[in-house]
Image (tube, rainbow, N blue to C red; front, side):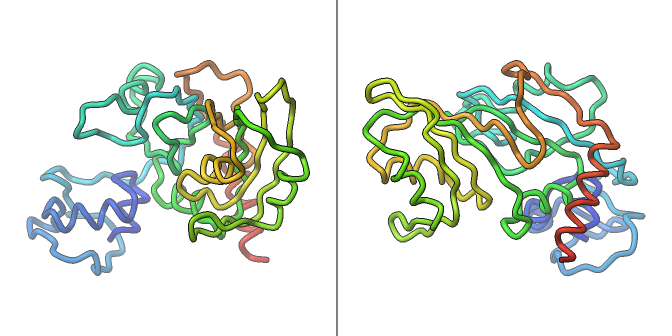
Length: 243
């Protein structure tokens, strides 16, 4: 059930499980009380009383998230979310999209969006090994040797972060621009690691997620990835997983 609804773009598997717990999903009028329901199709399934349609083709969008937006649908504190900006950024008639992973409130840059919950999950899993690249502006003293040591991984406050490729792009006094590539994407990973090195991050920008790059996409804008590129990438992921 959760897998089929995720593929249909209703929500991620985890979110679907919460929706079931809240009594929002039913089959032929009978409210579900457990996600452990095996189905071969979504015939007769409703969410909030509305029938669930057949899944649309997988679509993928690149969004340049500005700082000052939450990667969430809504915020109890009333802060603006990415969906506030997406109302104007996405073409009219775009299906419901879900963010692939998250960017912190004050982190900007490339955020992938898809209507396919299963594709979203595959892109997020650390086991997929998809690299994410960031550029950080940080104050403090750091050398290239300090950054190269991160290639062996590092443990900060009991949390172990795996292999990180880091390069000191340029320095102006105590101001540094550092590029970092990692595959795990743990919560606040870049900030935590750089702060552990004694640096104060003043700006953080994600510039790439796998083969997809921010390039010159304007802040607050979104662009759709051509279907042929999405399918090529999915096939490459499957080949890599089969190794």
